[in-house]
Amino acid sequence: MSETVVRLSFPAKPDYLLLARLALAGVVRSLPVGPELLADLKLAVTEACGNAVRHAYDAGEGSVELAFVLADDKLEMIVEDQGGGIAVPVEEVTAETPEGALSDAANGGMGMAIIRAIVDELDVRDGRGGRGTVVHMTKYLDAAPAA
Image (cartoon, rainbow, N blue to C red):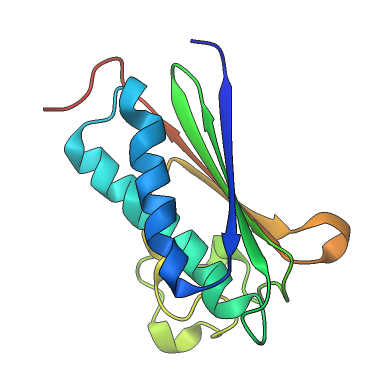
């Protein structure tokens, strides 16, 4: 399979987080993704999109851009907003980081640590022109789905 990109844009409102999960389930059907991995990936994309919904915009007025890049050996999930950005470098967040040590602007809890535990590569940076946040998650896939 050549690389395929699926893009989705939705309002930065909690009601639309389910849409991100459903879109993920649909786009990975042709990839070697078993039910456990799919559940983990849904959690990662929900955490990343949820952070954008909760923290990017003051009045919830804005959008979340989600892209899935599908290839034979990997899946990339890219979540982008045009909001205020994050304060804590993602490299400093681990599963052992106490929740109280994290800025609410960063993730409201353990979301980034959860994402880091699920995906193989995680890159969080400022958006274009220093506005917003881009969360780029990569998961390398096995040749056959787990049962």
